[in-house]
Image (cartoon, rainbow, N blue to C red; front, side, top):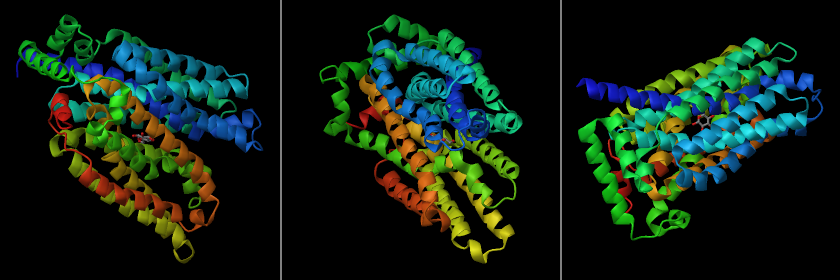
Length: 456
Ligand code: BGC
């Protein structure tokens, strides 16, 4: 490999890493509430105000649902870089507001802003990375985003473990979120615009300059040519958001809905948001249950590294099949730990519960975790990609909201006691096998233009 191509590749990695900081914020700001709640409740005396607590938790998810409606039109109009700069500014504002909040209302407003920013970057960053990355590394590089999400979750659990006992520990936890927000803002000002977006806007010279920096002269020309040809071919057909609902794009549309329905109703955030609570039933102290939660974060981040390594080598579908089967078995194990609680020794129950959750997280992290964000970044045509990935992000937050909202309610019913919730999640994951078989295309090694060609 020549020196130019090595340094060119390095630049792509640096850009992907800067962009992925948005994922770190996604993970941090969604995970932190799990560990910040005890000190928040004590500070604002919220012990008897479950609905206020509910709003503090879910403001981020509501913001996440609104964010895609901002990024949808603006990503294609302003470009991938500007929309991410806007999101970074909102992250900075949200982090400051939540950290200094003198009242619950300001805290909720800050959380809403954080959610807005997360809802935006969840669509625009995977998309930006997919457009910057070379075809044979795209799976790996978009998965940096997922890796960053898991690192953010882990970081929030660790910060929570360290500062959870302080009276206003929550302020320290929210201030910690300000640092990656500032890094994202500065980093986004420095990275180049997506060459594909530039070509689509008729700014060929700028696009070529970026492509040469990313790929070297020869590869840049081929890629430029491929994208131009695609745009020429499509120029005759209509290009607005309605195209997403056309017959031609029925499969990509279903992919954007289906992958997040399965990802979220596999129960991932029942664990990410409530693991301490779930573990409490098997541990004698909350501190030990929190420690087991830190373990969840660690398994999640480490296993995602495997996905980074294997997605472009083995392909998307083999990992998805493996992950779905593995999560189904793990969910059944967790369900059985509840169902047979009376007849199991407490040691065995603890092993089945914690072991089942860890195995579940492992299989989720190598499959459903990265695949959601990867698929929505690669299956849509260039001309509506910004809008379409934003709709995918909306689906994610919509389903996430319902899982987050219904889990504590179901926990309080017989479904909580007999492990029924986990068997329901297992059924969803099994349906995911059919979804993968009939709807998910293998996109390993294909250029975005080749994937687009599939929907003719
Ligand atoms: C999902 C999040 C989840 C995280 C866990 C992401 O892909 O979008 O909802 O909390 O994975 O690692």
